[in-house]
Amino acid sequence: MKPLRQTVVVALVASVVGLLGAAFPAAARADDPTTFDAYEWVADPDLPAVLERPEDGSDEYKMRRKTVVFPINVWGGWAPLIAANRGFNPGPDSVFAQKYGFMVKLVVVEDSSDLLTRYVNGETPILWGTTDMMVLFASRLATGPRPKVFQQIDWSNGGDGILVRSGRVRSANDLRGKTVVVAPFSPSHYYLLTVLDAAGVDPGEVTIKYTKTAFGAARAFWENEDIDACVSFAPDIYTIPEAKPDEFRLLSSTADAKRLIADVWAVREDFAAANPNVIRGLVDGIFEGMDICRDDPDQVAKWMYAGYGEHGISSADECKALMGDAHLTNWAENRTFFTDARNPTSFDRLWDDALRLYREAGAVEESLPAKMVADTTMLDDEAVSKRWKHTKDDYTNAILEVSDEARQRLAARRTTGSVVTMVVYFGAADESFDENSAEVAAALEEVARLAGKFGGALVLIEGYTDPISSGIPKLRARLGDNPYVAKVLGARERRLVPLSSVRAEFVKRALGDRYGLAADRFHVEARGGERPVTEDFEERWKNRRVEITILTVEGE
Image (cartoon, rainbow, N blue to C red; front, side, top):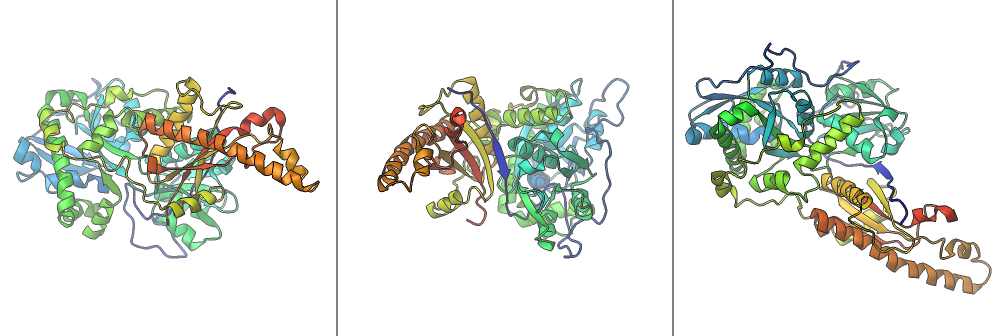
């Protein structure tokens, strides 16, 4: 078999109005469509850092008045924690006080370095963040106090996007040699690195400029014509192209990347060891808070507004909208995230993926291993698991409700629509390949991880064969010679279709068997000898391939 090789092309377009970790005004003017009217460049960005560390390395956190200080940011995913606490202030009526005998004080801490400093200095035992942010935090905490992640709060359901200037960038591959502006070491930064990686573009091939905030990135993009693309938040990623549709467009969005950004919380290892009842109460109480969010979202929105109102949120209605930007993850979904070895977007895989991307970008050299950070003792706790074992994971492999007709339309426009394509190659007459070989395992892992992250997308699997070995190009060149050439050509082309079908079905089955990806996520097409990559006889192995394409389904 020829060496397995991969190429990737990305040109994602999606449409969603959401929010990730920030608040925004209700509307923007057509002549000034950005949320911020100014921006601040960051010339030499650094990782989140401890601004001031005690002489002995760290201070132990000590509960005062049986109260835990829990920092959060402005984000709808924290709704269940706020609901269980009945607001931001500690009180005897909270779930935590009533059932576990301790109280919680919620404080908004947006700056990651400020958060890390409070954690190390003993002002709080807790870190909030996304899985990719925790990788960066952990790189600063190798000597302690080490973080332990006990629970996933949610999956982000949209809000980040990459805007481009239409005449300069058609796909992510076109970002080579271009200038992109982004807020450093944020979920948006991780998303950009993910898309570049999928496109086969090294970050070193892109000029990346940094602004202090994601909304600042949108403003800098709007004002500076020498910037080719930006990564920002809604609504700016939609209002900018609406203001000038001929000049700007949305290249990529997290609308379909529903399992890319996972919000979690971590606890100091020393505090967790000394206070297991508190950790159990937090985990259990947050799960109960998810039920409260479901049963009484209006009341939860009021509690959120009472705390978020002084941080730019304008109303309880806006808080309720914030809740819609997050999929809250119940006990069963937490189990899938932390313990399912087949899950292509598990905690371990997302952690390793973020570490790899930031390492390749030169941001970090090492971080703590995922298995040293994740802790499932409270998910496995007898009382917690008994209470919540009735929950179901309806999100990881949610049914993709796309009609057969829509699937055909999507497949037909795969070369001009919203696509992410990866390619794997077969030997001369191979119908399958050795699934257990290192090369194939790595390829399937990468495909599954991409398909898992884009959990709201259709996975198109197209099988191809080589037409050169069958003499098809030569027959096509002789079509005008006599009437029998067309018949021979048609017969040979038809003979190639079954082999291409077998190859595509093999890849579909392998992804399902190994990673548990649901069958309805896939649409298979047998292309036979169509669209040869090359007509060079020595390079004909490139035509024996299966292409796996991620198609956004917005509007279908």
